[in-house]
Image: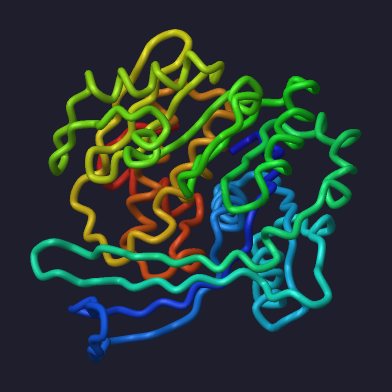
Length: 324
């Protein structure tokens, strides 16, 4: 990679606490699980680390607590080469955390259920991001998600829009988006459930087969709100991108054994933004992002499974995919 895209991520830090089980307990039921471990994550931090591991020059802005989880989050980000000099701290509140239950179903892969406790992520203030009014023009792309206060997303997106910097909103978890925000966005990336919440349009999808007409209608319902490009991730069916100039569907990578789907979407978004900043054509960007996410789901944990650039390049080469 000759150029290093300069990417700003404003978002969340979450320490994941991950349990695997064959059976998810019902109300009042106790079951014995299989394994448990902790791993750093959070949509913002995951996307920042993925972009950095793919060669981007990344700055992360967010908020942590003065606790062990906060120290671990900073350590991992620094190891990835991320600039964390603008990360803020709250002296009393706890760093965000999540409870993740991975249900392993024989012959059906692994399904996840996630409960996020936001902690300091929801304590980011406009003072914490005020420096961006003058600095945001230094970046090639801004990445946002819905795990921090919405007014912060709107403010950052407005700064970027006014400076002519592209903005990607990974609109997860699903929540109400102010109408003002849509007009500031260059890209929005919901999954099929999130875009249905936004538009009321159900994308017909079974396994790797998807009804592209329903996906197209959902994407256009968002584009009319002012977003230039709508990127829908659809799990095993890959991704569907509707741009100002047309549309493209990129199937998911094949031959992938999903061990832990946590952070697959974050991995995809990080890789997509790197490719977009490098000016690749959309087909190349989507293939790169799909295969990056495919490697991610084959490992356990969020950040630990996010691949380095050489791993993605080797995977593409092994599959005979030209990606120079």
